[in-house]
Amino acid sequence: MATKSYPYSAFLRGPGQVLPSLDNADVILERRDDENLILMRAERFEAGVAGLRIAARALAIVARRNSELAEEVLAEELPWVAWLPETERAGCVRELLGHLMAGADTGELLPFARALASWRSTAIVWSDPHLARDLQGPFAGDGPDVPRPGGRS
Image 1 (cartoon, helix red, strand yellow):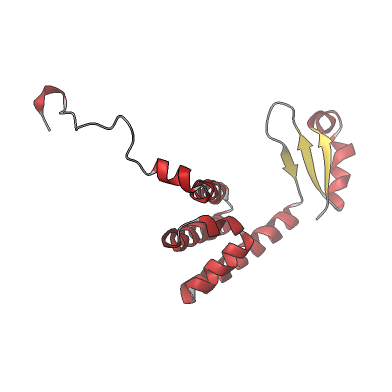
Image 2: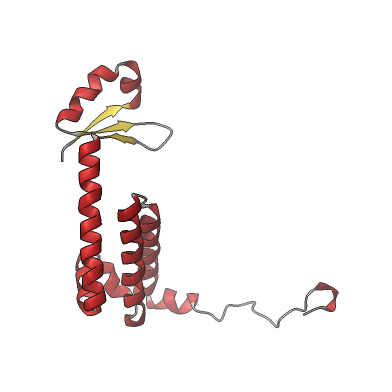
């Protein structure tokens, strides 16, 4: 789907100049001091959510029946998965699929986006063996356990 961008102020001054664009495009309202907004027809939004729901469920079925294939599919779309240790890849796939399915069902995809960013950051750390080793500890300054105040443990 095509998109057209307009300054948010243009929409506020004259929505009638912006809204006709929705006939053949989604509209991005660009704001200077905040996140941009997107206007789209409900029919296109609902079609996207329905498509996402079907794709997420189909991928989840593949993952349940053949986890290696699901990992391969996800790794092809997200090449940084290869940087994760093999022991972490299945957990990454499971978590991302879980968030994707929940998001497809509810329309709330921010948890999926956060998990995706988190796993990507984790993979980037693992891609640097020195950084990965340094972040696994032990850490300078680690000392003996300190008793709780008041002598209780």
